[in-house]
Amino acid sequence: MPFWAPDIGIDLGTETTSLYVRGRGIVISEPTLVVLDRENSRSVQAVGDEARFLLGRSPDRLVAVSPLKNGQVSDFDMTELMLRYFIRKAVGVSYLSRPRIIVSVPCGLDDVNRKALTEAVRLAGAKHVFLIEKPFASAIGSGLPVYDPVGNLVVDIGAGTTDVSVISLGGLVVSQSIPIGGNKLDEALIEYLRRESNILIGKQTAESIKKDLATALPLEESRTILVRGVNQLNTSAGTIRFSSSQAYDAIKNPCTAIIKAIRWVLERTPPELSADIMRGGIHLTGDGSRLFALDRYISENLGIPVLLAKDPGDCCILGIGYLTENIQLISPQNSRHTPKPAF
Ligand SMILES: Nc1ncnc2c1ncn2[C@@H]1O[C@H](COP(=O)(O)OP(=O)(O)OP(=O)(O)O)[C@@H](O)[C@H]1O
Ligand SMILES: [Mg+2]
Image 1: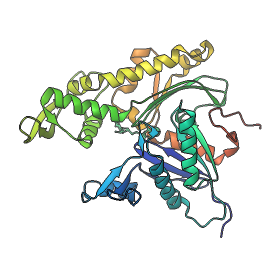
Image 2: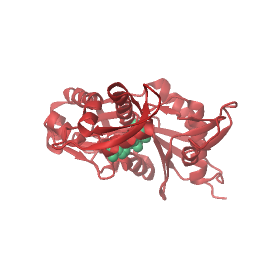
Image 3: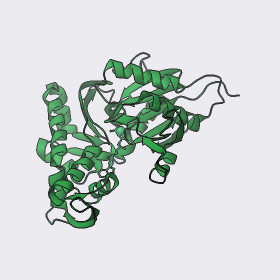
Image 4: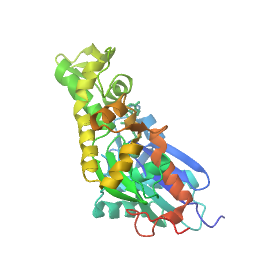
């Protein structure tokens, strides 16, 4: 029986949870989802991919629970159950010693939530738990020199939160987390279609409209698609033509909120670091930043170059993976400030 369980990194996302195992790489990337028995909420029926598969195919007796809401854990018991399942799937149980685990958190998470999450991860099987802010991990994952004395501005747009942070010398200098991400764009599209066209659509339809049609800047030539939903006036099936300019209108507010959050951080950034950011640009990570023309929209509003990471959705887990391979970079009690290693 091997003695030491390998260290594990977890990107605990509102939509997707990924696990990185030291020496092996990313081994799990599955929906942050648990399916339970409605009558016995401790009876877990499926987790992750299996839970997504069951969704919609399940009898009424089963209910799907997402343990995270807007980037924060909303159900610690479910988070513990889900993580225990993922950890076992990733490394098995045949070790005498439990693994050290690094977990991503939104920036500005309060101490009560930090403590509760740490406890949940410990109960799920960790020996030691380290919490790392998402934009810090994403900055490492997109190859930024986070330990150098230069300002790096990272905007991580996920499903539940947008985390904006200026990073220098291995720590967060100024940061802001807002509960706005891809989910809020989906909700804005659902609300717009209900209000303007009396059509009710589900979350999955809204998400595909967002990916296929929505844009953060108006297009020169508007595109249209057919959207199928339920007419709320007579509850019959209804189909309407929906244009990219309508989709642009629908998601304007959440896009403006992202600009406001970046501006808030820039206004509080020390001038020397601002100069670095003007030169180096704003780095977009998280799959929510794939929204069409979002990079141009931010750049035009703030007058700063914007760079979209190559695989934006993987930046956070790749950064956590780097820290998992180099766990000496993390201070023992805290990850809010990550000191430069003593080489
Ligand atoms: N091409 C695309 N255009 C717009 N949005 C997209 C695109 N591809 C994925 N998304 C959105 O990205 C979001 C998921 O991003 P990501 O996987 O980074 O979130 P997460 O890490 O689970 O959440 P968080 O970090 O907020 O807790 C979803 O809302 C999804 O709809
Ligand atoms: Mg994320």
